[in-house]
Length: 490
Figure 1 (cartoon, one colour):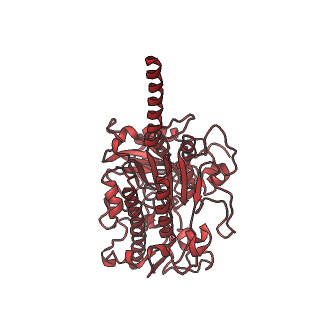
Figure 2: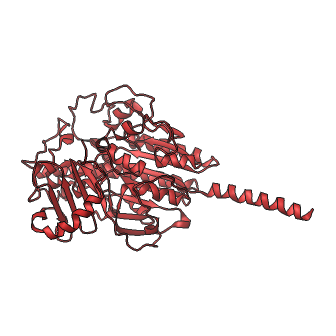
């Protein structure tokens, strides 16, 4: 009888331990920031005012050389969510998620890493722009909002407050008076200084929604994944005036490299078409003539104000986790979906295979028991986020992906990851290792090969491919390893 009682006690003790393990599984707060380049104090910026992100970075793993797969929003997010590099031309477009995932029936292979977490027992909440759509639903910029989810299987809840702008896409291009780029037929400036509070722009409403949801999630008896997608600093560079006032306009520098690189074809660049859509801008951008220094300084001021606005929102989210006693057991990720040329190489925008468009922040704060704070110099990619988060949550992956977990780097078990980051756009493949970027374009315009040496030319001012044929012989086979077949077929 005593033996039976001991056996029963052991069973119940084991059950208790299992349920306790489930309760202790870490939460995740994943913050996606649109068009955020490494213009943060934690990444060495001497001008950006980003105290909240910097404070988080001080106790996180900060990846100093993180590169996206594709320098455009929807395609970059497709790579993030699936852990896969682009294999089809549609994977290079903002339609990638809609065309590849939105109509897919649920199968053994999860549609995203969020879906995998949901299957593992996580309660998943999406607020704002995590996939490509501004609110997670499939519809065009000027169409009526739909109820068709862009990711049909990933979310337990999908939330968004469009406020006075009424739809997600209107909110994405919002001006403080309730109008938007579409309603004003693009007769707008690419920036706005408004005497308003944080919640008078959509990202402030997103923060408030997330703060309230965190309170409710604390009461749930299961771990959560909350994705919060902020719009700024995407164009238009609109922010409350108090964030503009943080900066002295005269002290803001213009680009350290506002010239076109030597020995390239202009097909590698572009005419800043997205930026020039804002028809009331002070000047139009062009490859043939740079905009004036005063206007360049104003635009950089506007971008920085938008960054500081988002920094404040992130600070509120982190403080709420602390107030609720959730901070230590919550993984926090800040991810920029790509960089942005702020006049660099004479471009205002993304959409290139240059460093300014491909490099973006990746900051990961693990849970307290896994805590390590360090700056990581290894070259990593957006596809690495998928396996990293699942490993941190002790959730297995049952299908092949392109990404590699970064946990060993974060825990100092691997001092150096000899990585290569592959990026794709403009009929080209670009590979980045610790010293070089080497790019191959599949086009008629020559030269089709570009080589940049960051040890002697950190600003990418000169393509050195023609003068280093032996080095290219070593590097091009590495580049071909990243050729997924994208340019081998029609």
